[in-house]
Amino acid sequence: MDIQLPYTPRPLQAVLHQELAQHRFSVLVMHRRFGKTLMVLAHLLRDAVMSKRKNPRYHYITASRVMAKQVAWDYCKMLAEVIPGVRMNETELRIDLPNGARLQLLGADDGGDRLRGIYSDGLVLDEVSLLSETLFTQVIRPMLSDRQGYCVMIGTPAGHNLFYDYWCMAESEPGWYRKMYKADETGIVPQEELEAAKAAMSDDAYNQEFLCDFSAATPGAIFAKELAEIEEQGRITKVPYDPGLRVDTHWDIGVSDATAIVFTQKVGRALHVIDYFESRNEALPFYARVLEEKGYLYGTHNAPHDIEVTDWSGTGKTRREVAYGLDINFRVLPKLPLEDGLHAAKLQIKKGTWFDRENCHQLLECLRFYHRRYDPKNRMFRTSIVRNWATHGADAWRYCAIAQRESFDGQMPPQRIAESDYNPLGAQI
Image 1 (cartoon, rainbow, N blue to C red):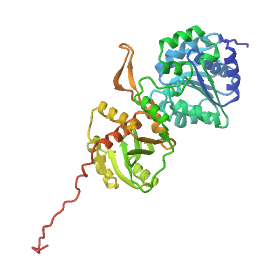
Image 2: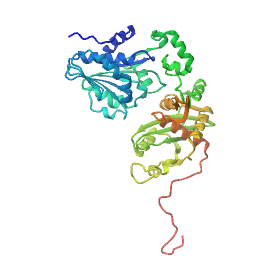
Image 3: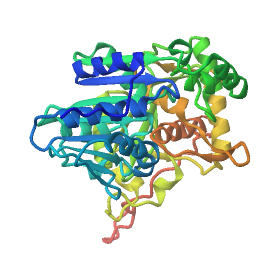
Image 4: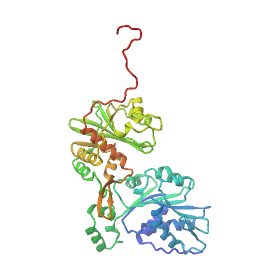
């Protein structure tokens, strides 16, 4: 039976369909209004209809189920309604085909945990910059293994984040394909519309949404200006570890969330940020081993105020007490209002701070993407911060800046063994 889907690809899209059929993993960076969602859904549905496998499964996955329904479900129904015997499940956002194949829209609301155990012959990850950093490696990649399915990542840049990392990786990774389409090159959006959009948008927003500029600052980014200045000054470069100087650490500690550690050395009046480490769902002994494996000569370990009051993993001890038992003597930083801490963090970047480009790559990405929440109703950025993958590194940097401005008062952990010079036998000591 000849089935003609109600979709006619543009010339650029027709070329893309051919490339996607020849590559198992693809990263496509496309400007707004390129028609990427309709294109990838048509690609998935065509493969589902033509598949000769038993019970083939295809998936479209984005940040949330609500987003998947709003963005893609109407397209799915429009494409599939011409197929005889097709069944559409509105509740499950699923299309069942006569050959036993299914195309389903899914959301990664919980980081993708609900997707575990599913197999897939082919899937699309939309707006990758909004997805969990572990979604592909821990959930999606295993989904594709037993059927050797394919994965297409699509989206528009939103700074140097996860999507950018995969874009860079696809350049050299064997078997991967990548392609970027800018609005001033494709001709899909009329030139007069581009000019009108540019007049109404900030340069960063226009460059990001229409010119696919990964380096454009995230709207509301707190540290964008300061990082751009020191980049121009050459202070993001190779910053080697000096074995003759002690290394201070600055922590943002999470129990069921990520823990981030910034490693610094004071070199005269300059602050050298030589290393960064982040992990999640690990207990404090894990990080104690990380410190040991780094092999640095340590000075002061700095931690936020809540290290005094929060139990670690249900031991009944505070995090500080647990750390002291692992030979990590934390200096407790004072609790400052968020805005005071952010001000200190911005000033610290500007005044003589150097970052190691390679070892601190993840930290720099966190700082570039850390941004305030936008209030579209009042057309202004709020004081509140958007909580996401960038928060932990940015918070650790904020604590680092606070540590530079606060003098060390020698505060030590509570004494665990009482001292006494009392002699029960009455001897003189």
